[in-house]
Amino acid sequence: MNEEWINRIALTWGNRTRQRQLRSVLDRYDTATEAASHHPDMLTREAVQHARQEIEFIERHHIQCYYYKDDNYPYRLAQCADAPLLLYAKGSIDVNPKRAVSIVGTRMPSERGKEWCRRFVLDLATAVPEITIISGLAYGIDITAHKAAIEAGLPTIIIPAHGLDRIYPAVHRTIAVQALGKGGILTEYTTGTEPERYNFVARNRIVAGMADALVVVESKSRGGSLITAQMAQDYSRDVFALPGRFNDTISEGCNDLIKKQRAQLITSSEDFIQAMQWEQEHKKAIQTTMVDMLYDLNDKQRKIIDKLRESEEGLHVNQLVMELQIPYNEMVAELMMLELNGIAKGLPGGLWRRVEQ
Image 1 (cartoon, rainbow, N blue to C red):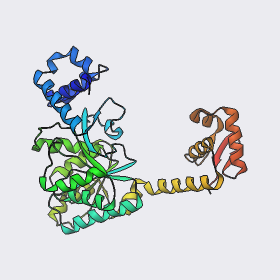
Image 2: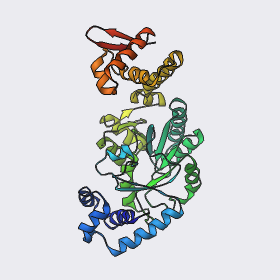
Image 3: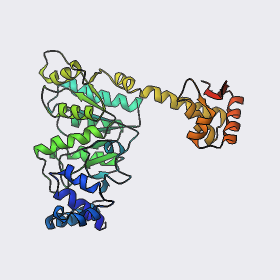
Image 4: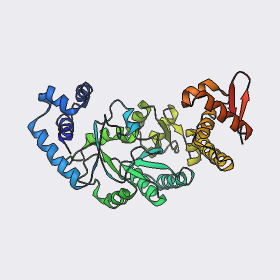
């Protein structure tokens, strides 16, 4: 790793208590090296020494690094204003999965809560096999979600409150190691970082930001799960909660989220999938595959059909030309071929729409 990475790590570690100020500085320059040269007060000798030690650890343990300006940075997290400037990952981790759901809850769940969580993940694996399960490896619902993902053969991403040189709690090390085979561990913290209380709150923004949706399974009236739910809501993520009986202390938080319309009520994976409209997308994918098999479409025809599917009223030929970047004469020829095969239909005024199979 080069000098740029030394500066990236040194700046983020040396200014870890003032990330917002650091980001405003980094945003003004093309590289961290350039930022450091203009703001030497933000780069201490201790931070540079720590960065060099961190790079040794990274190279020795094959750690993947993600800087917020790089193209490989998790795109969901990039949408969050307070996202970490630098992330470290270990395992066979895909930070941009097609579908991702974060599951959180109390550290002391009921047997009902644990079984519901397990069943929820197993059912998701059947209905949405491309989904990734995200949680924080804590006792209770977190570890239940990770275990269920491993059982179902799904990727699972662990978001700890410390660096990659340890596992907390240590009793969950076996699960963490298993997760590395299909998924992995993702953190903003460097080696030597203790799992302090503040870090757990801070890491919750990664749990919330990395996913399409957040599911809360049992939570008391106060706790980290509710903080994570608020973060997810702030990030415009869909939030869901499992309801409990009105007099169950362990479900007070979930019931309150539902009552205040800060979370949607779900009792099954079917509720969740329907609310996320993933079932409709799955059906569309199946329809596309069937059309491909029946008519042996070329690449241009597939693009046209996918675009026509976006509008029930139809799209103008000029709009198709502009958005798909296919020359007009070629577009007309492809549309005529699709119409001959009964897949598309020309309408008055130059409009075209897809014919449902």
